[in-house]
Length: 288
Image (cartoon, rainbow, N blue to C red; front, side):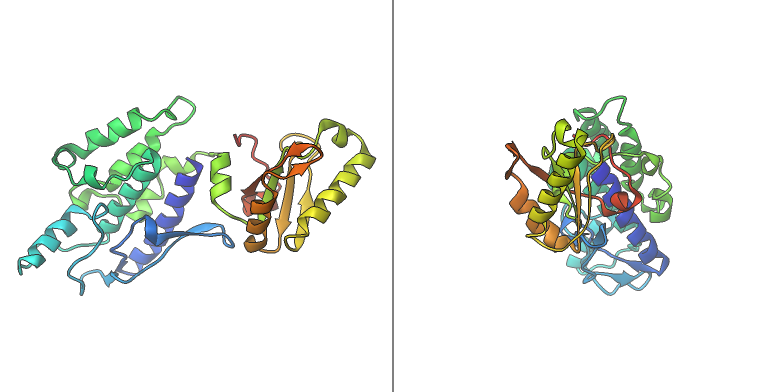
């Protein structure tokens, strides 16, 4: 949920800016959303099908599985040499993002689902079913905010679809999700978090603590320039080691080589950690 929230917010902010300038992306799909390790955000790429709203110069827009109903109709008419009466607007981007977020939540590609007659008849019921069948949904995770956000993007009538600016006001973005360990393995940043490195004994003895710290710094510097190193002695984050590298390239190399290594008789687990949280001194308590 942390990753979905992060991705949704970043892409919506990109779309809000793009639409405010009067442009439509027209090909939003997972392949065109990339993670920037240095800037710690998702970025929207590939503007090959983009056009100025009201002046569409591309006949066929969007990709199968992420194509809005009005774009589907327009493409079909164009193939028959006919002109569509319905103009494609920035609302097509919101439809695509709604499908992307639904796929992120469900863990499934939905191309065949969204092309089915059942979807065209009542996509709201299918969305409800996907959320009801997910094991992560419980009282502690208000996933219905995400469900409602996705539904607001997937109205067949483009006039009823939420705009990017309005979608950013969804209650879903007010929930302080903590990243899951799988999020921190998949999204590189310049900061590494090392688990299973320190024992309580090494934290209690100042001399042993300094020796271990020096050993860790020496080992981590083999993979790149270490900017800072933090080992909290109290919760949250007690016993975890945070290593900030000069760039994400070095931290990626270190993460790959440190994971599974033996340190003081224990297997090391290395994940990335949000640079912004580290800089603020904020250590997530719920990570596993």
